[in-house]
Length: 385
Image (cartoon, rainbow, N blue to C red):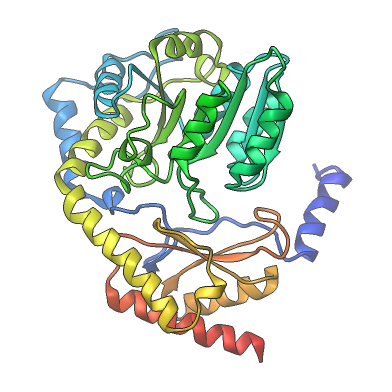
């Protein structure tokens, strides 16, 4: 049976705009595209130790068997959530199946009718989707613009509703970060609940990889943190960090928690073992990552490319190149040279804000970084000609 005509037309429009998405297989190219910032997803020791842990603890269960509220709440959940609570210096950690599930669950369930959500305009799609499912009113503020946030707060502060302010520790499409210290102070002044998505900060910031909120000692000033394990931790799943009452509420009202099959014991064991491995390696790997970030930033200055890049101190460095066709062409040229650099197209990012997204890792060499940027300068000149 064919697709309905409206859906077919939408696909055709994507093709005409050169923005049609397609699935591609993993490759063996030099990696400047993945979120595996510390290389933990490829760790043989994590793979082997997870298997050993399951065998040693006589865990022979392949599936979760049901939702956590039915039969899927394996004892490993308690062990891993207790560990996460201690590591991230919070009263509770509630594991979800993914970062998307966590944000959908949190934002659809916590803000109530007539409450207000003020969110950064560059917030991740999962945050925006969760907000759309909420009964609360929502307003976006200009990206990382605290003056605009304050103006919004002044407009709504006399309402009797609760106010939730939403931002990210590191924004996935730009790699930049807000001033979280000032943001927390503003939220305290206006009695707003601050929510921070730390997906791209965990494993990258703070000496032990615990994220930007803890590096800045703000864990007691943030109502909820969303952490994910699919980036630097190198496995799967996510958690919402907060007080015990928040966990109790999520277990009762977050639909993406209640109505989904739980994670497998193997997934839970991998989270725990991956944290162990991060703690063993993070000082060495994080130093490598930090050095690579600084080297990358120095090289774009040397090659006169700085004006094309979004200012970022994270592992995500973005070069703005307007136009889907142009940015896709350069991405393909990189592949021909054996390097994987992803083109980020509109409508994922705003039109004329298309970009090449360079993800840096602890395992990238200085030689690889120099070469990818040298090629970038060549490809840009070719496109301009």
